[in-house]
Image (cartoon, rainbow, N blue to C red; front, side, top):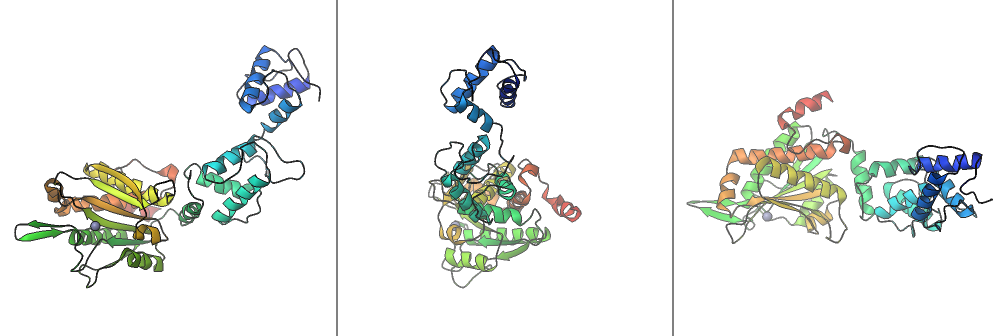
Length: 381
Ligand SMILES: [Zn+2]
Protein backbone atom coordinates (compact mmCIF):
# COMPACT_ATOMS: atom_id res chain seq x y z
CA UNK A 1 0.00 0.00 0.00
CA UNK A 2 0.96 3.62 -0.49
CA UNK A 3 2.09 5.24 2.75
CA UNK A 4 -0.44 7.68 4.18
CA UNK A 5 0.81 10.77 5.96
CA UNK A 6 -0.07 14.24 7.24
CA UNK A 7 -1.98 16.29 4.68
CA UNK A 8 -3.60 13.24 3.01
CA UNK A 9 -7.38 13.02 2.79
CA UNK A 10 -9.92 10.41 1.80
CA UNK A 11 -11.65 7.21 2.97
CA UNK A 12 -8.35 5.51 3.93
CA UNK A 13 -7.60 8.40 6.30
CA UNK A 14 -11.14 8.12 7.66
CA UNK A 15 -10.60 4.46 8.40
CA UNK A 16 -7.25 5.07 10.11
CA UNK A 17 -8.81 7.80 12.24
CA UNK A 18 -11.74 5.54 13.15
CA UNK A 19 -9.37 2.87 14.46
CA UNK A 20 -7.42 5.48 16.46
CA UNK A 21 -10.70 6.74 17.95
CA UNK A 22 -11.50 3.16 18.97
CA UNK A 23 -8.14 3.03 20.73
CA UNK A 24 -8.90 6.29 22.58
CA UNK A 25 -6.00 8.00 20.87
CA UNK A 26 -8.12 10.45 18.91
CA UNK A 27 -11.39 12.31 19.51
CA UNK A 28 -13.33 11.94 16.26
CA UNK A 29 -13.02 10.28 12.86
CA UNK A 30 -12.64 12.61 9.84
CA UNK A 31 -11.16 12.54 6.35
CA UNK A 32 -8.12 14.74 6.99
CA UNK A 33 -4.80 13.41 8.26
CA UNK A 34 -4.09 16.40 10.51
CA UNK A 35 -1.55 17.10 13.27
CA UNK A 36 -3.71 15.36 15.87
CA UNK A 37 -3.83 12.26 13.65
CA UNK A 38 -0.08 12.25 13.29
CA UNK A 39 0.36 12.57 17.06
CA UNK A 40 -2.05 9.64 17.54
CA UNK A 41 -0.23 7.51 14.96
CA UNK A 42 3.08 8.24 16.68
CA UNK A 43 1.63 7.23 20.04
CA UNK A 44 0.27 4.05 18.48
CA UNK A 45 3.58 3.21 16.83
CA UNK A 46 5.40 3.73 20.09
CA UNK A 47 3.00 1.45 21.98
CA UNK A 48 3.50 -1.30 19.40
CA UNK A 49 7.25 -1.04 19.09
CA UNK A 50 7.04 0.11 15.48
CA UNK A 51 9.41 2.80 14.18
CA UNK A 52 7.86 6.11 15.27
CA UNK A 53 7.52 8.34 12.18
CA UNK A 54 3.83 9.31 12.20
CA UNK A 55 3.37 7.75 8.77
CA UNK A 56 1.02 4.83 8.10
CA UNK A 57 3.07 2.44 5.99
CA UNK A 58 2.33 -1.26 5.42
CA UNK A 59 3.66 -2.34 8.82
CA UNK A 60 1.78 0.34 10.74
CA UNK A 61 -1.37 -0.39 8.76
CA UNK A 62 -1.18 -4.09 9.61
CA UNK A 63 -0.85 -3.24 13.31
CA UNK A 64 -3.75 -0.75 13.10
CA UNK A 65 -5.89 -3.29 11.29
CA UNK A 66 -5.19 -5.86 14.05
CA UNK A 67 -6.02 -3.31 16.73
CA UNK A 68 -9.66 -3.33 15.62
CA UNK A 69 -10.22 -6.73 17.16
CA UNK A 70 -11.01 -7.07 20.80
CA UNK A 71 -10.89 -10.46 22.44
CA UNK A 72 -14.10 -12.35 21.80
CA UNK A 73 -14.96 -10.54 18.53
CA UNK A 74 -13.99 -13.52 16.40
CA UNK A 75 -12.91 -17.13 16.73
CA UNK A 76 -9.13 -17.40 16.88
CA UNK A 77 -7.23 -20.35 15.51
CA UNK A 78 -3.85 -21.31 14.17
CA UNK A 79 -4.17 -20.42 10.51
CA UNK A 80 -1.47 -21.56 8.06
CA UNK A 81 0.39 -20.02 6.26
CA UNK A 82 -1.03 -16.54 7.10
CA UNK A 83 -1.36 -16.42 10.87
CA UNK A 84 -4.18 -14.46 12.49
CA UNK A 85 -2.90 -11.34 14.15
CA UNK A 86 -4.41 -8.58 16.22
CA UNK A 87 -5.04 -7.04 19.58
CA UNK A 88 -7.44 -9.85 20.45
CA UNK A 89 -4.62 -12.37 19.99
CA UNK A 90 -2.34 -10.24 22.15
CA UNK A 91 -5.01 -9.97 24.85
CA UNK A 92 -5.51 -13.74 24.76
CA UNK A 93 -1.76 -14.35 25.03
CA UNK A 94 -1.51 -12.00 28.00
CA UNK A 95 -4.43 -13.68 29.74
CA UNK A 96 -2.91 -17.13 29.22
CA UNK A 97 0.48 -15.92 30.43
CA UNK A 98 -1.10 -14.55 33.60
CA UNK A 99 -2.56 -17.96 34.26
CA UNK A 100 0.80 -19.64 33.89
CA UNK A 101 0.63 -20.93 30.30
CA UNK A 102 3.57 -20.59 27.97
CA UNK A 103 2.51 -18.64 24.90
CA UNK A 104 5.99 -17.44 24.05
CA UNK A 105 6.11 -13.73 23.22
CA UNK A 106 2.87 -11.80 23.52
CA UNK A 107 3.31 -10.68 19.92
CA UNK A 108 -0.33 -10.65 18.87
CA UNK A 109 0.25 -13.47 16.36
CA UNK A 110 -1.69 -16.72 16.74
CA UNK A 111 1.14 -19.16 16.09
CA UNK A 112 1.63 -22.84 16.97
CA UNK A 113 2.82 -22.05 20.49
CA UNK A 114 -0.27 -19.98 21.26
CA UNK A 115 -2.47 -22.78 19.88
CA UNK A 116 -0.68 -25.29 22.14
CA UNK A 117 -1.22 -23.08 25.18
CA UNK A 118 -4.91 -22.73 24.31
CA UNK A 119 -5.23 -26.52 23.93
CA UNK A 120 -3.60 -27.04 27.32
CA UNK A 121 -6.00 -24.56 28.90
CA UNK A 122 -8.96 -26.29 27.23
CA UNK A 123 -7.84 -29.66 28.54
CA UNK A 124 -7.53 -28.29 32.06
CA UNK A 125 -11.04 -26.86 32.12
CA UNK A 126 -12.58 -29.90 30.43
CA UNK A 127 -13.15 -28.51 26.92
CA UNK A 128 -12.20 -30.20 23.64
CA UNK A 129 -8.51 -29.31 23.23
CA UNK A 130 -8.62 -28.16 19.62
CA UNK A 131 -6.31 -25.19 20.19
CA UNK A 132 -8.74 -22.67 18.76
CA UNK A 133 -10.38 -19.96 20.80
CA UNK A 134 -14.11 -19.86 20.10
CA UNK A 135 -17.15 -18.94 22.19
CA UNK A 136 -16.82 -21.84 24.68
CA UNK A 137 -13.18 -21.17 25.39
CA UNK A 138 -13.86 -17.44 25.67
CA UNK A 139 -16.68 -18.19 28.09
CA UNK A 140 -14.35 -20.28 30.27
CA UNK A 141 -11.69 -17.54 30.16
CA UNK A 142 -14.20 -14.86 31.13
CA UNK A 143 -15.61 -16.87 34.00
CA UNK A 144 -12.21 -17.50 35.46
CA UNK A 145 -11.51 -13.83 34.87
CA UNK A 146 -8.62 -12.43 36.78
CA UNK A 147 -9.21 -14.63 39.78
CA UNK A 148 -6.74 -17.19 38.56
CA UNK A 149 -3.30 -15.72 38.12
CA UNK A 150 0.20 -17.10 38.30
CA UNK A 151 -1.07 -20.48 39.35
CA UNK A 152 -0.56 -23.96 38.06
CA UNK A 153 -3.16 -25.00 35.50
CA UNK A 154 -4.43 -27.89 37.61
CA UNK A 155 -6.01 -25.39 39.97
CA UNK A 156 -8.13 -24.10 37.13
CA UNK A 157 -9.91 -27.42 37.12
CA UNK A 158 -10.57 -27.12 40.84
CA UNK A 159 -11.91 -23.57 40.40
CA UNK A 160 -14.07 -24.63 37.49
CA UNK A 161 -15.45 -27.71 39.28
CA UNK A 162 -16.28 -25.52 42.25
CA UNK A 163 -18.08 -23.00 40.09
CA UNK A 164 -20.03 -25.71 38.30
CA UNK A 165 -21.30 -27.05 41.62
CA UNK A 166 -23.64 -24.03 41.80
CA UNK A 167 -24.32 -21.22 44.28
CA UNK A 168 -26.52 -23.05 46.78
CA UNK A 169 -25.47 -24.65 50.07
CA UNK A 170 -28.29 -27.17 49.76
CA UNK A 171 -27.04 -30.69 49.22
CA UNK A 172 -23.34 -29.76 49.32
CA UNK A 173 -21.15 -32.08 51.38
CA UNK A 174 -18.82 -30.52 53.90
CA UNK A 175 -16.38 -32.37 56.10
CA UNK A 176 -15.56 -30.81 59.46
CA UNK A 177 -12.34 -32.08 60.93
CA UNK A 178 -11.85 -31.52 64.65
CA UNK A 179 -8.08 -31.69 65.13
CA UNK A 180 -6.34 -34.32 67.28
CA UNK A 181 -8.49 -36.62 69.43
CA UNK A 182 -7.92 -39.83 71.36
CA UNK A 183 -6.11 -40.38 74.68
CA UNK A 184 -2.65 -40.06 73.12
CA UNK A 185 -3.35 -36.93 71.06
CA UNK A 186 -5.00 -34.09 72.95
CA UNK A 187 -3.24 -31.29 71.08
CA UNK A 188 -2.50 -28.25 73.22
CA UNK A 189 -3.30 -28.91 76.91
CA UNK A 190 -3.58 -26.18 79.53
CA UNK A 191 -4.30 -26.96 83.19
CA UNK A 192 -6.87 -24.77 84.91
CA UNK A 193 -7.13 -25.56 88.63
CA UNK A 194 -8.52 -29.07 88.98
CA UNK A 195 -9.61 -28.98 85.34
CA UNK A 196 -7.71 -28.85 82.11
CA UNK A 197 -8.56 -27.44 78.73
CA UNK A 198 -7.56 -29.46 75.71
CA UNK A 199 -7.41 -28.46 72.09
CA UNK A 200 -8.99 -31.82 71.11
CA UNK A 201 -12.11 -31.22 73.26
CA UNK A 202 -12.59 -27.59 72.26
CA UNK A 203 -12.06 -28.44 68.58
CA UNK A 204 -14.72 -31.12 68.88
CA UNK A 205 -17.12 -28.72 70.57
CA UNK A 206 -16.62 -26.22 67.74
CA UNK A 207 -17.12 -29.00 65.17
CA UNK A 208 -20.37 -30.16 66.79
CA UNK A 209 -21.73 -26.60 66.87
CA UNK A 210 -20.73 -26.05 63.27
CA UNK A 211 -22.29 -29.37 62.27
CA UNK A 212 -25.67 -28.24 63.58
CA UNK A 213 -25.54 -24.85 61.91
CA UNK A 214 -24.37 -26.12 58.53
CA UNK A 215 -26.92 -28.92 58.54
CA UNK A 216 -29.64 -26.36 59.30
CA UNK A 217 -28.48 -24.44 56.23
CA UNK A 218 -29.07 -27.54 54.11
CA UNK A 219 -25.56 -28.98 53.86
CA UNK A 220 -24.60 -32.61 54.36
CA UNK A 221 -22.11 -32.50 57.20
CA UNK A 222 -19.63 -35.18 58.24
CA UNK A 223 -17.22 -35.09 61.15
CA UNK A 224 -13.93 -36.94 60.78
CA UNK A 225 -14.05 -38.17 64.36
CA UNK A 226 -16.25 -38.48 67.44
CA UNK A 227 -15.70 -36.79 70.81
CA UNK A 228 -13.35 -39.48 72.12
CA UNK A 229 -11.81 -41.69 69.42
CA UNK A 230 -9.87 -44.72 70.64
CA UNK A 231 -6.99 -44.15 68.22
CA UNK A 232 -5.40 -40.97 66.94
CA UNK A 233 -5.98 -40.22 63.25
CA UNK A 234 -3.37 -39.10 60.74
CA UNK A 235 -3.88 -36.28 58.28
CA UNK A 236 -3.86 -38.86 55.47
CA UNK A 237 -6.70 -40.83 57.09
CA UNK A 238 -8.77 -37.68 57.49
CA UNK A 239 -8.11 -36.68 53.88
CA UNK A 240 -9.06 -40.16 52.64
CA UNK A 241 -12.33 -40.01 54.53
CA UNK A 242 -13.21 -36.68 52.92
CA UNK A 243 -12.16 -37.95 49.47
CA UNK A 244 -14.29 -41.07 49.83
CA UNK A 245 -17.29 -38.95 50.74
CA UNK A 246 -16.73 -36.83 47.62
CA UNK A 247 -16.85 -33.78 49.87
CA UNK A 248 -17.15 -30.29 48.37
CA UNK A 249 -15.24 -28.59 51.18
CA UNK A 250 -13.20 -29.51 54.22
CA UNK A 251 -12.54 -27.34 57.25
CA UNK A 252 -10.14 -28.51 59.91
CA UNK A 253 -10.40 -26.97 63.37
CA UNK A 254 -7.44 -26.44 65.69
CA UNK A 255 -6.28 -24.18 68.48
CA UNK A 256 -2.72 -23.02 68.88
CA UNK A 257 -0.32 -23.00 71.80
CA UNK A 258 3.00 -21.36 72.60
CA UNK A 259 5.49 -21.15 75.49
CA UNK A 260 5.05 -17.41 75.46
CA UNK A 261 1.66 -16.60 77.04
CA UNK A 262 1.57 -13.33 75.09
CA UNK A 263 1.27 -15.18 71.76
CA UNK A 264 -2.27 -14.87 70.42
CA UNK A 265 -4.33 -14.51 67.24
CA UNK A 266 -6.08 -16.52 64.56
CA UNK A 267 -4.49 -18.01 61.42
CA UNK A 268 -5.88 -19.98 58.49
CA UNK A 269 -4.00 -22.36 56.21
CA UNK A 270 -4.63 -23.56 52.66
CA UNK A 271 -2.69 -25.81 50.30
CA UNK A 272 0.23 -24.18 48.57
CA UNK A 273 3.98 -24.49 48.27
CA UNK A 274 4.74 -20.87 49.07
CA UNK A 275 6.44 -20.29 45.71
CA UNK A 276 3.35 -19.55 43.73
CA UNK A 277 1.71 -22.96 43.45
CA UNK A 278 -1.50 -22.65 45.33
CA UNK A 279 -5.05 -23.94 45.49
CA UNK A 280 -6.92 -20.82 44.41
CA UNK A 281 -10.27 -22.00 45.74
CA UNK A 282 -8.65 -23.10 49.00
CA UNK A 283 -6.94 -19.74 49.27
CA UNK A 284 -10.23 -17.95 48.74
CA UNK A 285 -11.92 -20.00 51.46
CA UNK A 286 -8.99 -19.35 53.79
CA UNK A 287 -9.27 -15.62 53.10
CA UNK A 288 -12.98 -15.54 53.78
CA UNK A 289 -12.71 -17.59 56.97
CA UNK A 290 -9.84 -15.51 58.27
CA UNK A 291 -11.48 -12.17 57.52
CA UNK A 292 -14.87 -13.15 58.92
CA UNK A 293 -13.28 -14.29 62.18
CA UNK A 294 -11.06 -11.23 62.52
CA UNK A 295 -13.88 -8.78 61.76
CA UNK A 296 -16.42 -10.50 64.01
CA UNK A 297 -14.18 -11.18 67.01
CA UNK A 298 -11.39 -8.61 66.82
CA UNK A 299 -8.80 -11.36 67.32
CA UNK A 300 -5.27 -10.60 66.17
CA UNK A 301 -4.93 -11.30 62.46
CA UNK A 302 -2.12 -13.84 62.03
CA UNK A 303 -3.08 -14.02 58.33
CA UNK A 304 -3.45 -16.91 55.94
CA UNK A 305 -0.59 -19.15 54.93
CA UNK A 306 0.13 -21.73 52.24
CA UNK A 307 1.17 -25.14 53.63
CA UNK A 308 1.81 -28.57 52.16
CA UNK A 309 0.50 -30.47 55.19
CA UNK A 310 -0.84 -33.96 54.47
CA UNK A 311 -4.44 -33.00 55.15
CA UNK A 312 -4.29 -30.05 52.75
CA UNK A 313 -2.18 -31.85 50.16
CA UNK A 314 -4.09 -35.11 49.94
CA UNK A 315 -7.63 -33.75 49.96
CA UNK A 316 -9.19 -33.47 46.52
CA UNK A 317 -11.54 -30.63 47.50
CA UNK A 318 -10.81 -27.09 48.71
CA UNK A 319 -9.58 -27.57 52.26
CA UNK A 320 -8.49 -25.17 54.99
CA UNK A 321 -7.30 -25.46 58.54
CA UNK A 322 -8.15 -22.77 61.06
CA UNK A 323 -6.17 -22.20 64.25
CA UNK A 324 -8.69 -20.32 66.40
CA UNK A 325 -6.33 -18.54 68.75
CA UNK A 326 -3.91 -19.60 71.47
CA UNK A 327 -5.10 -21.71 74.36
CA UNK A 328 -1.88 -20.71 76.13
CA UNK A 329 -2.81 -17.02 76.11
CA UNK A 330 -4.77 -16.29 79.32
CA UNK A 331 -6.77 -13.58 77.55
CA UNK A 332 -7.62 -15.69 74.54
CA UNK A 333 -8.27 -18.79 76.67
CA UNK A 334 -10.91 -16.85 78.64
CA UNK A 335 -12.70 -16.14 75.40
CA UNK A 336 -12.26 -19.62 73.90
CA UNK A 337 -13.70 -21.44 76.91
CA UNK A 338 -16.82 -19.29 76.71
CA UNK A 339 -19.50 -21.09 74.65
CA UNK A 340 -20.90 -17.74 73.47
CA UNK A 341 -17.54 -16.85 71.97
CA UNK A 342 -17.29 -20.24 70.28
CA UNK A 343 -20.74 -19.59 68.85
CA UNK A 344 -19.35 -16.38 67.34
CA UNK A 345 -16.51 -18.36 65.73
CA UNK A 346 -19.03 -20.80 64.31
CA UNK A 347 -21.06 -17.93 62.84
CA UNK A 348 -17.93 -16.58 61.17
CA UNK A 349 -17.23 -19.95 59.53
CA UNK A 350 -20.83 -20.28 58.44
CA UNK A 351 -20.71 -16.83 56.82
CA UNK A 352 -17.44 -17.69 55.06
CA UNK A 353 -18.85 -20.95 53.69
CA UNK A 354 -21.94 -19.14 52.44
CA UNK A 355 -19.80 -16.49 50.76
CA UNK A 356 -17.77 -19.19 49.02
CA UNK A 357 -20.90 -20.10 47.11
CA UNK A 358 -22.03 -16.59 46.27
CA UNK A 359 -20.99 -15.61 42.77
CA UNK A 360 -18.06 -13.21 43.13
CA UNK A 361 -20.09 -10.27 41.84
CA UNK A 362 -22.76 -10.86 44.48
CA UNK A 363 -20.34 -11.10 47.36
CA UNK A 364 -21.06 -9.02 50.44
CA UNK A 365 -18.85 -7.13 52.87
CA UNK A 366 -17.10 -9.13 55.57
CA UNK A 367 -19.06 -9.43 58.79
CA UNK A 368 -22.31 -8.42 57.11
CA UNK A 369 -24.09 -11.76 56.78
CA UNK A 370 -26.67 -12.27 59.47
CA UNK A 371 -26.38 -16.02 59.68
CA UNK A 372 -29.67 -16.30 61.57
CA UNK A 373 -31.45 -15.13 58.45
CA UNK A 374 -29.50 -17.46 56.21
CA UNK A 375 -31.99 -20.28 56.24
CA UNK A 376 -34.84 -17.93 55.48
CA UNK A 377 -32.99 -16.46 52.51
CA UNK A 378 -32.07 -19.92 51.28
CA UNK A 379 -35.65 -21.06 51.49
CA UNK A 380 -36.67 -18.18 49.22
CA UNK A 381 -33.96 -18.69 46.61
ZN1 LIG B 1 -3.69 -28.68 66.59
